[in-house]
Length: 272
Length: 281
Image (cartoon, rainbow over all chains, first blue to last red; front, top):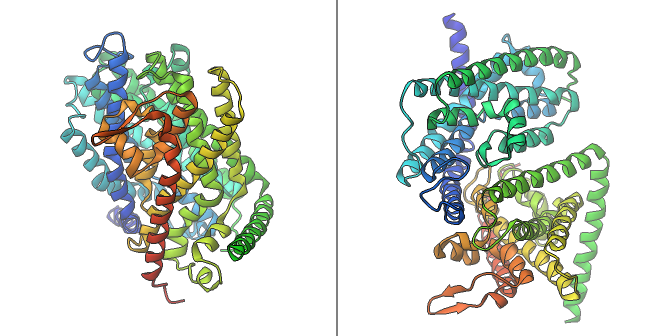
C-alpha cells in the first residue's frame, strides 16, 4: 500500500515539475483575472443601473453582491477543476508516447487522475488562491451563507472536481478514435462556458433553456456548488444536488471505463 | 518609388505562393477544415448567447440594444478574422516552437525579414471562415437595425475590418515577442484575450480610465466599438485632458493607431531577435 502511494506521489510530483515550465502561464492568468472580474463588475453595474429596480434591486434574482461573488467563485472553480487531461492524452496519442503509458504497471485511468491532480495542486496554489485573494481585496467575493448547506459545499466541490476529471478523461480517450481531439476539447470547453454557468448564471436564461441545461451534467460541475456557497439552494434541495452529482459521477465513471476498454483495442501508435 | 513597388510585388507574390502552398497542406486534412468551421461557429454561438442572456435582463445597456452590440461583436470578429489569416498561428507558434525549441534558426537563414517569413509560413487560409462568419453577423445586425446599404457602408466595413486586423496583429505580435525575454512556451497573451472579450461591449459601460485603456493602451476599441459607433452614428466623445475627441471622427483614428501599433510591434520583435540565443542545434 505504502509503495503504491509513493507511485502516486511521484506522478503528482512529475506533473508539478512539468507544469512549472508553464509558470508564466499562471502569472498571466493571475494578471488577466482582475481584468475579467472588473469587466464583470462594470457590466453588471450597468445592468443594475438600467434595470427597473436600480442598484439596490435584483437581476435574475441576484443582488449585486451575490452576482460578483458568483463571478469570482465560478472563475476560481473552473481554474481549480481544469486538469487538461484531455489535452494531455491527445498529445500523448499524437506523439506515440501513449505506448509508454500503457506499459506502466499502473492503471491508465488512475495514472491520469494523479497526473491531473498534480496540475490541480499547481493551479490551486498559483492561480486559484491568488484569484480568491484578489476577489476579497476588490470587495467582490463575499463570505458564504451559513448553515448546514455550507458544510455541503466542500462535498459538492469534490464531486464537481471528479465529474470534471472524468469528462476531461473521456474527451482525452476520444483521441484514440479520431487521432486529433483538440477541436472536441475546445468544443466541450465552449459548452461548459454556457451550460455550467461560467459566463453568466443559468438564471439569466429563459426557463425552458434553463430546464434543458439543468438536465445536463454540466451545471453540476460549477453552477450548483456555487449556488450552495451562496445559500441560494438549501435544505432538502441541497441534498438533492449532492445526490444528482453522485449519480452523474457514477455515470461518467462507468462511461470512462467502457470507453477505456474500447480505446485500448483501438489504439494505433503513430511512429513512436 | 519604383524599387519599392517592385519589392512590394515581389513580397506579395511570395506571400501568395505560400498561401496556396499552405492551403494545399491544409486541404489534405479535410476533417480539420470542418472542425475549424464548427469550432469558430460554436464559439460565436456561445458569445451571442452571452449577449442575449445579458439583454434578457434589460432591453438596453447605456443606450445600446442587442442588435447594436451584435454589430460591435461582428466588427470585433471581422478584425480578429483578418488578423487570424496572417497572424494567429504565427503568434501562437512564436513562443514555443520558434523561440524555446529554436525553430527560428531556419527562418533566420532565409533572405526575407524574419517576421515576414514567419507570417508566410504560418498563414492559414482556413481562418477565412472567421471572416465570413463575422460578415454574416454584421449583415444580420445591419438588417435588424434597418441600416441602408451604401457604398460608404461597404467601404467602412472593409476598411475597419482590415485596419482592426492590423491592430490585433500589432498587439498580439508585441505580446508574443516578449517571449524572446520571458522564455515560456505558453506566451504572455492571455490578458489580451481577457481584454478582447470585454472590448465587445459598448465602451460606455466602463469608467473613463477603462475607456482610455481600450482606446489607447490596448486599442481593441478601434477594432470593434468605434467602427460600429461610426456606422450607427452614435457613441461617446472621448475626453483627452481639456479637449475631447468627438465620436463622429474618432473611428478614423484607427489608421494612426494601427501604424503606431505596428511600429511598436516591429521594434519589439527586432529587439527580441537580437537577444535570441537559439538552443545550439
